[in-house]
Amino acid sequence: MTPGARLQAVIELLDQVWAGRQPADQLADAYFKKRRYAGSSDRRGIQTTLYDILRRRARLDWWIKRSGLAISATPRTRIIANMALTDKSSPDDTSALFSGANHCPDSLSELEHELAESLYGRPLNHADMPRPIALEYPDWMDASLSALWGDRLELEISALNQMAPVDIRVNTLKTTPETAKHELAQQFIETETTPLSPLGLRLTSKARLGGTQAFRDGLVEVQDEGSQILALICGAQPEMLVVDYCAGAGGKTLALAAAMGENGKIKGQLYACDVSQTRINRMGPRLKRAGATAVRQKVLSGKGDTWLQKAKASADRVLVDAPCTGTGAWRRDPQAKWRFTPDQLEDMLKLQQSILADAALLVKPGGRLIYATCSLLQEENEQQFIAFLKEHSNFAPLPIDQVWSETIGGPPPPAGPCLRLSPASTGTDGFFCTVLERTS
Image 1 (tube, rainbow, N blue to C red):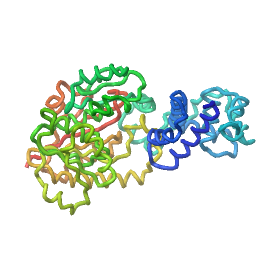
Image 2: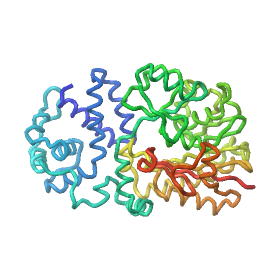
Image 3: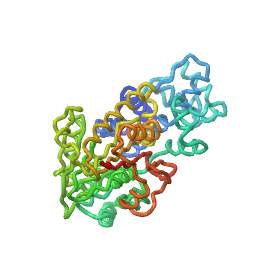
Image 4: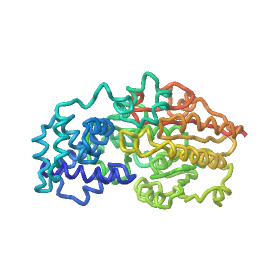
């Protein structure tokens, strides 16, 4: 593909990203499946530019507005601005790529050419930018993020704007970390042990893991180290009854299945629950590949669900990885930060409260309810479990250092009554977790 054709591909992908709710990586995968002619260097170049634009959206839009031209922020104008501000591309060089020939973008309009001239040679960052613009987050989150991090705000948000590593979890139903590492090396994929998760390996360079025999045989699963930690914190063991209440795509379900395994088989009862039949169906191939077909899948219909009524007070562990704003996963889905509004956050908080109250009914005395999100906002985390405890006096929080020592060993990396992970502090995606024990 020519450089101009790559730019056109980025424009098409940006149109799709900003038109819907699918993460950019999923859209890119689907895009390239239909375009087998795109080589590895083409894919890499297109994805790099795509994520650069997504991670710089607020600053690019600020400059487009500051140009004073009657021109809107679109995929084309953001690319033009990025080329001028970041790549230092001259207006003539930009025009040459926007030629309209051989699958290149249409030629620049008069206003677009003026934009390229106006921004050429300027820096991407500017002292006049408000903090949310300079750090690339919605201004309505400023109060929440400032209260959470204080002086560490710039450090933490900057880390969220970096590219995330590829972490994989070794499936102990089928192999050991040492054997999996060796198998991947045989397929020319080098890894290093993750610092926190005893089951994690981190790719040291880019690789197509899905095509390896180790992946096809279910020896490994792609899973961020932070997500692995949440599954380990549950303390699931053989012979327990464990419920993954918001199972989604099934990543943590698979990790729980491995924790409950003996001699390659799940011992006990493990339920993967979700309100979406589609998500439950998608989990099937992953369970089969991992050798976790004994997992029982349940589609929940709400408070009156028959199974929920029957299973009351029976579970040793209930994991609630609640739906949330996903602020902790901005490294992987930069567009997610612009999807939510304050009103939508309020709706999300009500949903989380409802889910947590329903899931609590499943926990037996002495059992544990694990509430987790991939959010950084205290509204979705500390404030939620504090509100839950006010209404549920039969639950008490367990110190996270105690739980970490029991389940993983040693002290937890961040201090505090709850577990908070972030790219800047632990090198993982952002996660929150609290462990509540039913006392009566």
